[in-house]
Length: 420
Image (tube, rainbow, N blue to C red; front, side, top):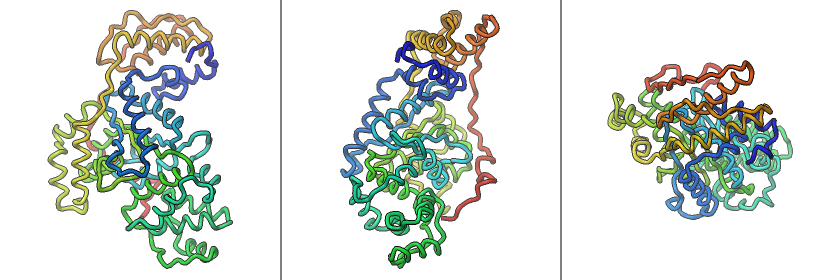
């Protein structure tokens, strides 16, 4: 995009996002990521999910794991992928893994992904917006969705029952309670029974929500989105290195969930779901092979615990982190120069100010991340524009900690566990 066609407000939004280190749509549209092989692999994932919905899951490529140092462009790529997926008619959820959304707790992560879901041409939360437009008689893939909810062995029968209530009950408050159930907050059994009686449906299979049914719930919503006319559901999950801060058993569960969401565990496929994770470059050497030695410690320690059935999936996840990440290469010297020129134009458009070229004295280094370059240029331009000070910004590398953190190993005080 040319700065001549970029509105001042959009240019300023882009600069403020780059200054904060959290790229937005304006930033990635003007400063597109430079690595073509990453774009090609992501495009291939989108094409396969859209075209092979009913083919064997083995034909769907797994999701992507982006590996890079801090500030090297992982978040920039995720934001770019979010808009690529929306343009390809996917529902998209972009979530950072943290205390509220730990990878070892699939229930919390599921709820966060549903709340963060956005869809093409819709401005509000995707599930609510799509549900309010839902018509089963005109849904393009409704029969496949119906068959999944009603005829899948072992699937929580509440999904089929709540679907019937949602489609047949005229009370909007009841429909909202069904959507809350689909988001991970179960309806009370009495309320669901009453709603079923009101639409003259039997409640013979009604039970408490089945435990361990979070992956099927991911599939339920991906199929719901598909039935509504979208190509599937894309999850963009940042900061996978947070796994290292969990307790040992939590790390085991996190690795298993990672493998399943990425599509690597063929015993637990999730139709229509594609995931992209990011992780720091030295995670494998520091955590899988380093002092923690998760590759060997976790399988041995999980054997005598209730998490023993997850060992195979956890090993698959750890091996993927060690062997199959997609390396985000640092920009070349020429690419840094080109990005600097574009950033200079963007800053000039944002503030109607003739920004000078980026500091010529800074030496190019493979260890300097793109975020460091951009923030140092922007800070130097700020000082020059506002105070007439010409400054050379000194950047220090951020040290990543892989030590366990007790604060990340418990549920937040304001969010009690929900027994599902």
